[in-house]
Length: 295
Image (cartoon, rainbow, N blue to C red; front, side):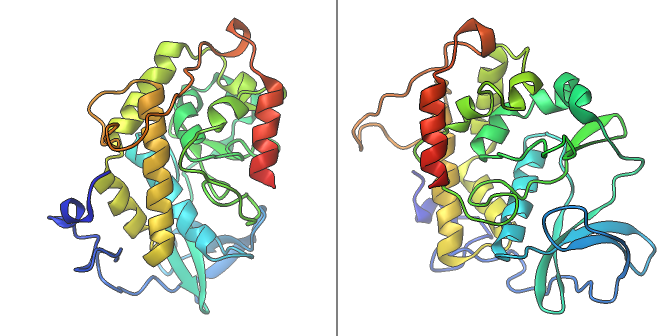
Protein backbone atom coordinates (compact mmCIF):
# COMPACT_ATOMS: atom_id res chain seq x y z
CA UNK A 1 0.00 0.00 0.00
CA UNK A 2 1.26 3.45 -0.83
CA UNK A 3 2.87 5.12 2.18
CA UNK A 4 1.69 8.48 3.52
CA UNK A 5 5.06 9.95 2.55
CA UNK A 6 4.43 9.05 -1.08
CA UNK A 7 0.82 10.22 -1.01
CA UNK A 8 1.78 13.52 0.60
CA UNK A 9 4.32 14.36 -2.10
CA UNK A 10 2.55 16.74 -4.44
CA UNK A 11 -0.92 15.77 -3.21
CA UNK A 12 -2.97 18.76 -1.99
CA UNK A 13 -5.54 16.62 -0.22
CA UNK A 14 -3.51 15.83 2.90
CA UNK A 15 -2.24 18.22 5.51
CA UNK A 16 1.33 18.21 6.86
CA UNK A 17 0.54 15.38 9.27
CA UNK A 18 -0.88 13.08 6.62
CA UNK A 19 -4.48 13.73 7.62
CA UNK A 20 -7.22 14.35 5.09
CA UNK A 21 -8.07 17.97 4.39
CA UNK A 22 -10.25 19.60 1.76
CA UNK A 23 -8.41 21.28 -1.05
CA UNK A 24 -9.67 24.73 -0.07
CA UNK A 25 -8.89 24.06 3.61
CA UNK A 26 -12.21 24.96 5.17
CA UNK A 27 -13.95 26.86 2.39
CA UNK A 28 -17.62 27.43 3.17
CA UNK A 29 -20.19 25.21 1.47
CA UNK A 30 -22.97 26.89 -0.51
CA UNK A 31 -25.91 27.85 1.74
CA UNK A 32 -29.22 26.99 0.05
CA UNK A 33 -31.46 28.11 2.91
CA UNK A 34 -33.00 30.87 0.78
CA UNK A 35 -33.52 28.82 -2.37
CA UNK A 36 -37.17 28.41 -3.37
CA UNK A 37 -38.57 24.90 -3.08
CA UNK A 38 -40.84 24.05 -5.99
CA UNK A 39 -41.39 20.32 -5.51
CA UNK A 40 -41.16 17.88 -2.58
CA UNK A 41 -38.81 14.93 -2.27
CA UNK A 42 -40.05 11.61 -3.59
CA UNK A 43 -37.25 9.59 -1.98
CA UNK A 44 -36.24 8.32 1.45
CA UNK A 45 -34.73 11.59 2.71
CA UNK A 46 -36.11 15.14 3.16
CA UNK A 47 -35.49 17.58 0.33
CA UNK A 48 -36.93 18.15 -3.11
CA UNK A 49 -36.52 20.35 -6.17
CA UNK A 50 -35.18 23.82 -5.43
CA UNK A 51 -34.58 26.86 -7.62
CA UNK A 52 -31.44 28.92 -7.07
CA UNK A 53 -31.31 32.75 -7.39
CA UNK A 54 -30.38 32.42 -11.08
CA UNK A 55 -33.48 30.33 -11.80
CA UNK A 56 -31.61 27.02 -12.17
CA UNK A 57 -33.27 23.96 -10.71
CA UNK A 58 -31.53 21.44 -8.49
CA UNK A 59 -32.57 18.31 -6.66
CA UNK A 60 -31.42 18.53 -3.04
CA UNK A 61 -31.72 15.97 -0.27
CA UNK A 62 -30.78 16.06 3.39
CA UNK A 63 -29.90 12.78 5.15
CA UNK A 64 -32.31 12.15 8.01
CA UNK A 65 -30.20 9.71 10.05
CA UNK A 66 -26.54 10.56 9.51
CA UNK A 67 -25.17 13.58 7.66
CA UNK A 68 -22.19 11.50 6.51
CA UNK A 69 -24.51 9.83 4.00
CA UNK A 70 -24.33 13.06 1.96
CA UNK A 71 -20.53 12.81 1.92
CA UNK A 72 -20.70 9.16 0.94
CA UNK A 73 -23.12 9.82 -1.91
CA UNK A 74 -20.97 12.69 -3.18
CA UNK A 75 -18.00 10.31 -3.16
CA UNK A 76 -19.99 7.63 -4.96
CA UNK A 77 -21.15 10.06 -7.66
CA UNK A 78 -17.54 11.17 -8.16
CA UNK A 79 -16.26 7.60 -8.45
CA UNK A 80 -18.81 6.78 -11.14
CA UNK A 81 -17.95 9.95 -13.05
CA UNK A 82 -14.20 9.30 -12.75
CA UNK A 83 -14.84 5.92 -14.39
CA UNK A 84 -16.83 7.48 -17.21
CA UNK A 85 -20.16 6.07 -15.99
CA UNK A 86 -23.02 8.59 -16.19
CA UNK A 87 -23.98 9.84 -12.71
CA UNK A 88 -25.34 13.09 -11.36
CA UNK A 89 -22.96 16.03 -10.87
CA UNK A 90 -23.44 16.58 -7.14
CA UNK A 91 -22.02 19.01 -4.58
CA UNK A 92 -22.32 19.38 -0.84
CA UNK A 93 -24.49 22.23 0.46
CA UNK A 94 -25.92 23.42 3.77
CA UNK A 95 -29.30 24.74 4.87
CA UNK A 96 -29.91 26.00 8.39
CA UNK A 97 -26.97 24.00 9.64
CA UNK A 98 -27.93 20.75 7.91
CA UNK A 99 -25.62 19.08 5.39
CA UNK A 100 -27.21 18.21 2.08
CA UNK A 101 -26.38 17.11 -1.44
CA UNK A 102 -27.45 19.11 -4.49
CA UNK A 103 -27.33 18.26 -8.17
CA UNK A 104 -28.59 20.14 -11.23
CA UNK A 105 -31.77 18.69 -12.71
CA UNK A 106 -31.04 16.68 -15.84
CA UNK A 107 -32.53 18.32 -18.92
CA UNK A 108 -35.55 16.44 -20.27
CA UNK A 109 -34.93 13.49 -17.99
CA UNK A 110 -37.29 10.57 -17.60
CA UNK A 111 -37.26 7.13 -16.00
CA UNK A 112 -36.41 4.30 -18.38
CA UNK A 113 -38.14 1.55 -16.40
CA UNK A 114 -37.23 -2.12 -16.14
CA UNK A 115 -37.10 -2.71 -19.90
CA UNK A 116 -34.84 0.28 -20.42
CA UNK A 117 -32.55 -0.67 -17.55
CA UNK A 118 -32.17 -4.21 -18.86
CA UNK A 119 -31.24 -2.93 -22.33
CA UNK A 120 -28.98 -0.02 -21.34
CA UNK A 121 -25.27 -0.11 -22.25
CA UNK A 122 -24.66 2.59 -19.62
CA UNK A 123 -26.21 0.38 -16.94
CA UNK A 124 -24.23 -2.69 -18.01
CA UNK A 125 -21.00 -0.68 -18.09
CA UNK A 126 -21.31 -0.05 -14.35
CA UNK A 127 -21.62 -3.62 -13.09
CA UNK A 128 -18.14 -3.82 -11.54
CA UNK A 129 -18.37 -0.24 -10.23
CA UNK A 130 -21.72 -1.06 -8.61
CA UNK A 131 -20.26 -4.16 -6.97
CA UNK A 132 -17.12 -2.29 -5.90
CA UNK A 133 -19.18 0.36 -4.10
CA UNK A 134 -21.75 -2.11 -2.70
CA UNK A 135 -24.48 -0.21 -4.54
CA UNK A 136 -27.40 -2.36 -3.40
CA UNK A 137 -30.04 0.15 -4.51
CA UNK A 138 -28.61 1.02 -7.91
CA UNK A 139 -31.93 0.51 -9.74
CA UNK A 140 -34.36 1.62 -7.06
CA UNK A 141 -37.32 -0.38 -5.78
CA UNK A 142 -39.36 0.35 -8.92
CA UNK A 143 -36.50 1.03 -11.37
CA UNK A 144 -36.66 4.76 -10.67
CA UNK A 145 -32.97 5.41 -9.97
CA UNK A 146 -31.86 5.39 -13.62
CA UNK A 147 -32.83 8.43 -15.68
CA UNK A 148 -32.38 9.10 -19.39
CA UNK A 149 -31.10 12.50 -20.51
CA UNK A 150 -29.30 13.55 -23.68
CA UNK A 151 -29.03 9.99 -24.94
CA UNK A 152 -27.31 8.67 -21.78
CA UNK A 153 -28.61 6.79 -18.76
CA UNK A 154 -27.63 8.26 -15.39
CA UNK A 155 -27.33 6.70 -11.94
CA UNK A 156 -29.01 9.50 -9.99
CA UNK A 157 -29.53 8.10 -6.48
CA UNK A 158 -26.36 6.65 -5.01
CA UNK A 159 -27.17 7.09 -1.34
CA UNK A 160 -27.21 3.32 -0.78
CA UNK A 161 -23.53 2.78 -1.46
CA UNK A 162 -20.49 1.92 0.67
CA UNK A 163 -21.27 2.18 4.42
CA UNK A 164 -24.94 3.21 3.99
CA UNK A 165 -28.27 1.71 3.04
CA UNK A 166 -30.62 3.83 0.94
CA UNK A 167 -32.63 5.09 3.93
CA UNK A 168 -29.52 5.94 5.94
CA UNK A 169 -28.94 2.88 8.09
CA UNK A 170 -25.33 1.73 8.14
CA UNK A 171 -24.14 -1.50 6.57
CA UNK A 172 -20.92 -3.48 6.37
CA UNK A 173 -18.42 -2.39 3.70
CA UNK A 174 -15.51 -4.82 4.08
CA UNK A 175 -12.12 -4.07 2.58
CA UNK A 176 -11.18 -7.70 1.93
CA UNK A 177 -13.98 -8.94 -0.34
CA UNK A 178 -16.49 -7.78 -2.96
CA UNK A 179 -19.48 -10.07 -2.38
CA UNK A 180 -21.64 -7.95 -4.67
CA UNK A 181 -19.95 -9.45 -7.73
CA UNK A 182 -22.29 -12.37 -7.05
CA UNK A 183 -25.13 -10.90 -4.99
CA UNK A 184 -26.01 -8.24 -7.59
CA UNK A 185 -26.70 -10.95 -10.16
CA UNK A 186 -28.21 -13.56 -7.86
CA UNK A 187 -31.52 -15.17 -8.91
CA UNK A 188 -34.41 -12.85 -8.14
CA UNK A 189 -32.22 -9.73 -8.06
CA UNK A 190 -32.82 -6.86 -10.48
CA UNK A 191 -29.25 -7.09 -11.72
CA UNK A 192 -29.85 -10.62 -12.96
CA UNK A 193 -31.52 -9.23 -16.08
CA UNK A 194 -29.97 -5.76 -16.08
CA UNK A 195 -26.45 -7.16 -16.43
CA UNK A 196 -27.40 -10.10 -18.64
CA UNK A 197 -25.31 -10.33 -21.77
CA UNK A 198 -22.04 -9.28 -20.16
CA UNK A 199 -19.21 -11.65 -20.99
CA UNK A 200 -16.26 -12.55 -18.81
CA UNK A 201 -14.13 -10.36 -21.07
CA UNK A 202 -16.52 -7.42 -20.53
CA UNK A 203 -16.37 -7.80 -16.75
CA UNK A 204 -12.59 -8.19 -16.75
CA UNK A 205 -12.26 -5.04 -18.87
CA UNK A 206 -14.46 -3.09 -16.44
CA UNK A 207 -12.36 -4.31 -13.52
CA UNK A 208 -9.10 -3.38 -15.24
CA UNK A 209 -10.40 0.11 -16.00
CA UNK A 210 -11.49 0.61 -12.40
CA UNK A 211 -8.24 -0.66 -10.90
CA UNK A 212 -6.01 1.46 -13.11
CA UNK A 213 -8.18 4.60 -12.82
CA UNK A 214 -8.73 4.61 -9.06
CA UNK A 215 -5.13 4.94 -7.97
CA UNK A 216 -4.35 5.65 -4.33
CA UNK A 217 -3.83 9.34 -5.08
CA UNK A 218 -7.10 9.53 -7.05
CA UNK A 219 -9.03 7.95 -4.20
CA UNK A 220 -7.47 10.35 -1.71
CA UNK A 221 -8.53 13.25 -3.91
CA UNK A 222 -12.12 12.04 -4.29
CA UNK A 223 -12.47 11.27 -0.58
CA UNK A 224 -11.23 14.75 0.35
CA UNK A 225 -13.46 16.46 -2.22
CA UNK A 226 -16.40 14.62 -0.63
CA UNK A 227 -15.68 16.48 2.61
CA UNK A 228 -14.59 13.42 4.59
CA UNK A 229 -11.84 13.97 7.14
CA UNK A 230 -10.05 12.25 9.99
CA UNK A 231 -10.84 8.67 10.94
CA UNK A 232 -13.89 8.51 8.69
CA UNK A 233 -11.84 9.50 5.66
CA UNK A 234 -9.32 6.82 6.58
CA UNK A 235 -12.10 4.24 6.84
CA UNK A 236 -13.24 5.01 3.29
CA UNK A 237 -9.66 5.00 2.04
CA UNK A 238 -8.98 1.60 3.61
CA UNK A 239 -12.18 0.05 2.28
CA UNK A 240 -11.93 1.47 -1.23
CA UNK A 241 -8.26 0.64 -1.68
CA UNK A 242 -8.78 -2.83 -0.26
CA UNK A 243 -11.76 -3.63 -2.48
CA UNK A 244 -9.90 -2.29 -5.51
CA UNK A 245 -6.99 -4.61 -4.68
CA UNK A 246 -9.39 -7.55 -4.37
CA UNK A 247 -10.63 -6.83 -7.89
CA UNK A 248 -7.07 -6.48 -9.16
CA UNK A 249 -6.10 -9.88 -7.80
CA UNK A 250 -9.39 -11.51 -8.74
CA UNK A 251 -9.13 -10.42 -12.38
CA UNK A 252 -5.31 -10.48 -12.50
CA UNK A 253 -4.97 -6.83 -13.39
CA UNK A 254 -1.38 -5.76 -13.90
CA UNK A 255 0.19 -2.42 -12.95
CA UNK A 256 -2.00 -1.75 -9.94
CA UNK A 257 -1.12 -0.23 -6.57
CA UNK A 258 -1.85 -3.45 -4.70
CA UNK A 259 -0.12 -4.47 -1.52
CA UNK A 260 3.18 -6.24 -1.98
CA UNK A 261 2.30 -9.98 -1.82
CA UNK A 262 5.67 -10.67 -0.17
CA UNK A 263 4.71 -8.59 2.86
CA UNK A 264 1.56 -10.49 3.70
CA UNK A 265 0.42 -14.06 3.42
CA UNK A 266 -1.10 -14.64 0.03
CA UNK A 267 -4.84 -15.09 -0.07
CA UNK A 268 -6.72 -17.22 -2.52
CA UNK A 269 -9.31 -15.42 -4.60
CA UNK A 270 -11.91 -17.41 -6.53
CA UNK A 271 -12.33 -16.27 -10.12
CA UNK A 272 -15.86 -15.96 -11.43
CA UNK A 273 -16.09 -18.69 -14.05
CA UNK A 274 -19.16 -17.32 -15.78
CA UNK A 275 -22.29 -15.24 -15.42
CA UNK A 276 -25.92 -16.24 -15.37
CA UNK A 277 -26.82 -19.52 -17.12
CA UNK A 278 -23.23 -20.42 -18.00
CA UNK A 279 -22.37 -21.53 -14.44
CA UNK A 280 -25.04 -21.57 -11.70
CA UNK A 281 -24.31 -19.33 -8.75
CA UNK A 282 -24.14 -20.71 -5.22
CA UNK A 283 -27.29 -18.98 -3.94
CA UNK A 284 -26.86 -20.32 -0.40
CA UNK A 285 -23.40 -18.75 -0.19
CA UNK A 286 -24.74 -15.49 -1.63
CA UNK A 287 -27.55 -15.37 0.92
CA UNK A 288 -25.15 -16.17 3.75
CA UNK A 289 -22.95 -13.25 2.67
CA UNK A 290 -25.94 -10.92 2.55
CA UNK A 291 -27.19 -12.08 5.93
CA UNK A 292 -23.73 -11.49 7.42
CA UNK A 293 -23.56 -8.01 5.89
CA UNK A 294 -27.04 -7.21 7.17
CA UNK A 295 -26.40 -8.35 10.73
